[in-house]
Image (cartoon, rainbow, N blue to C red; front, side, top):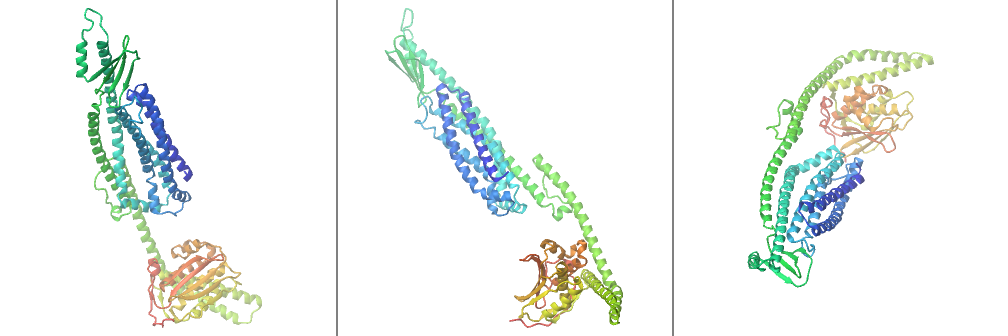
Length: 639
């Protein structure tokens, strides 16, 4: 769901749920509260007024809140990380904000209908309070599905957040204890709101029924009193019972007024809860005012009993929420400890059984996952041990047979050199040159393999001595000629004049630099390869440019890792192994070798070596730090 669709979806949900709640209130209030026709008309008008005010206020505030989150939502749509953690955490508060704004707007709109100058003439304060409480119940009950639906939509948007950002945001919320607080509040709301709807609703219906029955009884009493006092009864004594009726009227605080003009029958409730009943008589009418007895006394007891019931529900919801929060905390701890050594060894981080069945099922699933992690970790540990043993064995093998491998090749190269001294025709000279060139290429490859094996076997020794950087580069260029294809253009060299003498193993640095140059010249035989050298804060920085662009920066960086050289493409030959050895040799000098994208295309190798003696870098793998070095005399600090 895109940003625009999410905002529209939240707005439409709020409108539908809110209008649905007001519709239920407007149609159900007359039936539940036993309202007369005048009160029913007032309720419908009141519903239209309150729904309009609620929607105008709540939609304005909700729209502003969603507009503030629009930038973060768009970043999530694009899969970008261009947002703050607080902004991501603020997205989770949108459902709560929507429900709060809706409830507050509806309650304030309902409160505005309670003053006497707003209510209709047939609606007294007691009926107004009944209507207000019923609206609060309906709108609060509608808040539950509204929250659930908006929470589902926002959760789908949060699922698009990068895993690292989502984890950091959750850690930020957990640091403030917000998830635990929300769990408690949500459980309390889930328990209290439905029970409140039943308890307070039952009290309101009971009160409405009592009020209706009391009103009917009072009207019947008013009619009987008016006729007993205002009309002569047939018989020998026309005014029989009139005195008794007057005494009853005074005892019940009923006032009687007779007027000599006829008037229709009517019942009008007053603001103080009294009823004014107009009773038509034969040639006049009586106006009977009945005070009290509207059933209002039922409200305090009904509300008190409902309040006690809600307090019990609140306590129960709090206990359930606390138990659920503890279960979820234990489950989250179990997830975080899946890679913990104690769990991998068979220990369980759960200290008590879960109260809730779904959380208990999650715990059992995590235990099964931990069992699989243990099996995988054991297999991985055995594989690592087997690989290290194989590497050590390979290194020992190559290191021990290096003389036996190089002796025949040296004989071939020696005899080819002697043959080149003899008088030969052109074809013979070309053949001898090919033998010598291929032999030197094979010798360089063999030396690379043997040196890599020595690094693995911890048998490579650096012999440091004062040397010139220019001499090292020239030696590397000579070695690179054996690795480059026949006819490849030479590399261009640009070295600053202020580079001082350095303390390196010139043969090993030249070997590393030759591997980089050979790789560059093989990929760019037409030219463009160059070496630049500068002095930078007590270190020499050598840049080797390879302009072909046949390999991306990621692919070349993968080749620089000595662990990947055995998986290199076959078209690279032994150059891939040479790149891995080059990084190992540079790190043994305390330097660094990485690759970057060149400005004009292609890649550039960045080789940085300290001028004097430095320990091997600590960020390299153990197999690349192996080897020993000999001390170097202290060199003067360059100015």
